Every structure is written in C-alpha cells, then in structure tokens.
Length: 77
Image: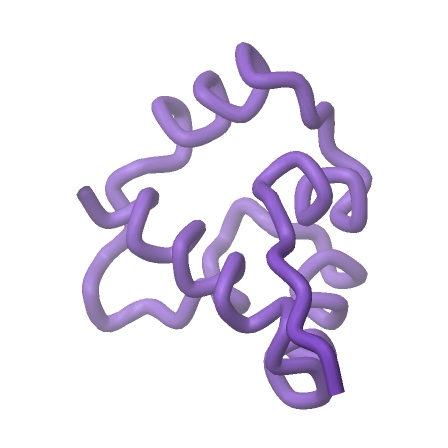
C-alpha cells in the first residue's frame, strides 16, 4: 500500500473551506490558539459536518491523520 502526503490545501478543500495560502493563514490566525485539552474535531469553529468528517478521516484513513495532526499543531502554536 502506497502512502500519500496530503497538504493543508487538500484538507481545507475536503472541509469546504477556502484553500488558497492566504485563506489558510487567515484561518489559522483567526482560530488559534486552540486549548491543549480540546480535540481538533471538537473545536467550536467547525460545523457539525466538518467535525464529523475530521472524526471519520482520523478513524479510517492514516493518510489523512498526518495532515490533520499538523493542522492541530498549527492551531496550538
């Protein structure tokens, strides 16, 4: 099985968010910092469908888990 490297742009596309570099940077600025005890998929800024998508991607697909973890870290820095 071949591993894939997903980018923030692809994750933002999956979440239905603007995925250009400026929009991603703005999202990170606006939503950070995320409290250390808050799971990314439980953050208050997601819609119910976005939160469910994150849960499913984390549970079902290791390829997506890496980029979701990177997003989580970016929101906590």
